Amino acid sequence: MDRAQKEKVVEELGQIFESSGVVVVAHYAGITVAEMQDLRAKMREAGGSVRVAKNRLAKIALEGKPCESIASLLTGMTVLTFSEDPVAAAKIAEDFAKTNQKFIILGGAMGETALDRAGVEAVSKMPSREELIASIVGCIGAPASNIAGAIGAPASNIASILSTIEEKAEAA
Image (tube, rainbow, N blue to C red; front, side, top):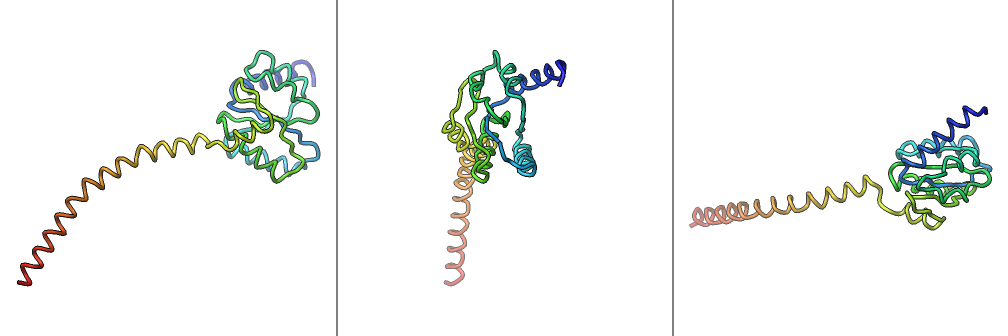
């Protein structure tokens, strides 16, 4: 890799570190190509990405970025998983680590906040952006359906009372 290629990689990594909601750092020694492709596919499905980069280049890219504190995690064979959604990359990485013993999560960063192993696990248990939006929409929609039910209820009650009176009048 020549100097121009290295500068390009550093620039790409710098953009990743700046724009990502969460970055998770893990060791991946011993993972097969098929397992790595599986991780990449799952991450892509969730709107995230997986990147393997030289630690020295990643450390250079981290300089001056909000998540600069994760530079100490970049030792050995490391892989970066990241996403704009602050929860997606952590969830996928946690799920993958549960099924693959060779994928060892070291920590990560959420904005300026450095995360240790437990922090990544805690973030992975948070609801995703889509889940939060769905629950907010549900909360907003619930009062409207309750109001519609309350408005419709008296009319149906009146109709049933009138039909009961009519049946009694016909019977008499």
